[in-house]
Each structure stands twice: as structure tokens, then as C-alpha cells.
Image 1: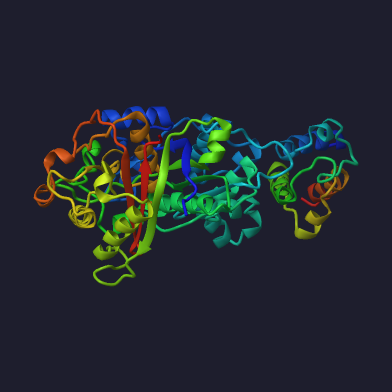
Image 2 (image 1 turned 180 degrees about the vertical axis):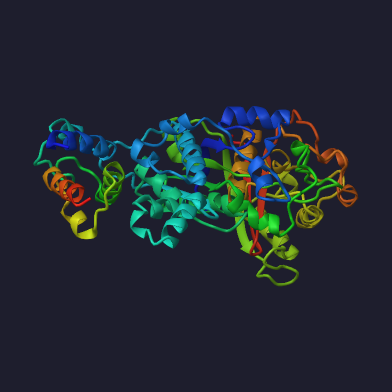
Length: 424
Length: 84
């Protein structure tokens, strides 16, 4: 039986390399890094004092939140998620549901790792001082993980599934697949999918403590994020949000909506923290299986893939990832697809990475380019022995991809892979 | 502080939470926060905290439960101010 076709009709993004889609689209083609030095991290004795932090004027929030919602708002992930989500919603040509009846066929699946950390910090101080009565009504709504889907669902007036998924760094990619499955299963027509990640020392501190962030680039932050490079020395923490409106092809056609790309399918799995997998390292067999299952689910052949948008965080694991793609696709050397990593420009946006990178993936299909990887002129020799140098562009290519595979991998040994196609 | 002054301060505090503008325009002693102003019941606790900050008083749970109308709120505020 043929699956119902699902297309993307709206995009939104908040990142350190652009706080709206057009700025982001332009910056990633030019190789503009959003990584900058953060004084606060130095003051707090972080080894890594740089990050990819979205910067915008606080007045922008007035376009998205009403005065009550803004009162006491102290949840950066909520800001990013609502801005990206509502931008995608409007970009799709939808307006806010002003009627009293929910949109029964419209839902929100918007993931996060942790939400409202700064709000939670305020609450902890009050509670510890015996002042719980002064918390106010917003502590719960800004710190519950599902706060982000709840805000978006309420703003739009959704009557279908409104939920928040969480699977570490594969969260965003997983959200897209959950939305895709819900639409192919005929349970919804439109889903706003995406993910968000808070900024700040309380989110990034744990990674700094694990010594997996680069600490030698505090004076030249734009060179710090070096996926696939011989000198990659850890991932640069980032934050932001990405959002995509997924819609059944019938619904999109009926509305005469602009179609950015089609989703052919995908797969999520876990390595079970067995066979080399652990809380922090992937089971390679599971990664390969996830990619192969995604290809099967999309009913394509591995040679149909023109470009890979990798997870590629700029750690020693990049070599393993390339090896896994080679094995899963049975392609290597000059037969390997082009591959790129957005993390070279925006850093690793953790729970938001999958959705921000999927927005970049969809833009490549729609606007006919393959963005260049920055900071990998010194390609890792083991990667160079697996695939041809030219498959890892260092400048944006004028190339019109038809199919792009996007994968994300997360702590807990979890994997997600989505197959995107140019719409025709 | 007379009743007029209290009412005008209270009006400023509740304004951001009001969802029924007409109710706000007709604000009087008998105005009910939820019925007439359509303030979300979860936000009543925020109104109370703002009142505490504005008047530098502490409103206990018992007093808070009474503060559903303008009249009752003004009474509570007056009592707490006197007790200061």
C-alpha cells in the first residue's frame, strides 16, 4: 500500500548564524560562524568560554508573546522555540486560530532536552529560602519540558497531538519523524515539528565538566568548531530552535501552499548500550542499521542519496560516523555522497541540533546548494582514507541535490535518520 | 491612602492579566476578577504577588482566598496596611 505523502510547507529557525530563515539561508551559504566568546563563561571558570548563542533584540519577543506571557519569562529555550515555531507557522501561510474551536487535525511535536533552566534556578533560590509562596504561576509552565509544545499549541489553537519528545541530541530529528508518522498514519493533517534548547552555563556546564568541549579557541572562537578536521578537539555548545511545518500533500495542495521539500521516510532506533554502545558512545551496528532502515522505509536505494547532512560534532567520533555511513550505504571514495555538518558554523545545539540542521537540509533542496564545511581544511587523515576530499566541500557548491539523508545521534545510544527529497 | 488611590493602584496591577477590556473600563468595587475581567484563575496568584510588592505587605492564604473582587481586595489591602 502506498504511504500518504508528507511535505514541508513552512520553516522557522533561531540560531547563532541567523535568527530568521532568510538570514540563516544566506549565512550558511557564506560560511558565517555564529560562535562567539562569552564573558560569563570565563567568569565562571569554564574551560570552554565560547558558544553559539542566538542574538536578537528583546523587543522581538513582543511580536510573539503577550504581556502576561512575557511577565517573568526566563526560559531562553521557550523564547527560541516560540519564535521559530510561530515563524514556521506563518511561513506556511497559516494564521492563528482565532475561533473557539480547536484545529482537530493540527498538532505540535516540539522536543527539548531541558526547559527553563534559568527559571528553575530562580525557583530553587526561592524554595531554599522558604519562600515557595512567592514562585508565582509561571514556574511550572516555563520549566515543564512540554512547556514549549503547550505554548505553541495554545498560540495556534491545536486540537491534535500536542507533545514534547526528548532523546538528547537526536530530539529534533526524532520530532520530525514522529510528526511524519502521525500524518502518514492518517491521524493528523498538519504538525508543527521541531525542537529547542536553552542557552547558558547551567546547560553547558555538564559538558564542560566532561572535558568534551574545545578549550584552546577562546581567543579565536569562529575556528573552534571543526567537524571532520584533524584538529577537531570537541564540540562547541550551541542553542536555538528549528521548526518545520509537516503537512499531508493533499492538504498542502488544497491550500496551494509553497512546498519546500518532501519527506520520504526515516527510522529511529537505539544501540541498547550494547556492542560498543554506552550512555555516551554509539553502537556502530545500530547507527548503520538506523541508516539502512531509513533508506528502506523511504523506498530508495543508497545510491540515490546525493548529500548527507551528518551529526558530525567535531569529536574523535566523526571518523566512526563516516565509517558507519560508508558501511551502511556501501559507498566510499569518490562514490560517496557529499557530506556536510552545520555544526561547523552554529556549534552543537544539543536537543535543537536535529531540527536546525533539518531546516538547513530542506533549504539546500529548495535553493539548490550544498553548504560548505568551515574549519576542515585539515581533513582528518582517517576520513581522507575513506572518502574523497572533494566530497567534503569547504565552500558552498552550486549543486542541485535531489535526496538528502539527515541523521542525528544522542546520549543514551539513540539514533534518528530522515530522508528528505526535492519536491516534484 | 484613600479608596480612590487604592483602586487606581489596583487597576495598574491587574491590567496586564485582564482578558476582557470592557470589564476593565467599567472597573468598580463590585467587579469580579474572574467573571467580569476574565483573568485566568492561575494568574490570580500573580496578581496577589504584585499586590504584595506594590504595597509591601504579606497576604496569607486565608486573605488571598477572599481576594476575588475589587471590594474584597481593597478590604484586605487596607487591613494589611493598618497592621503594618
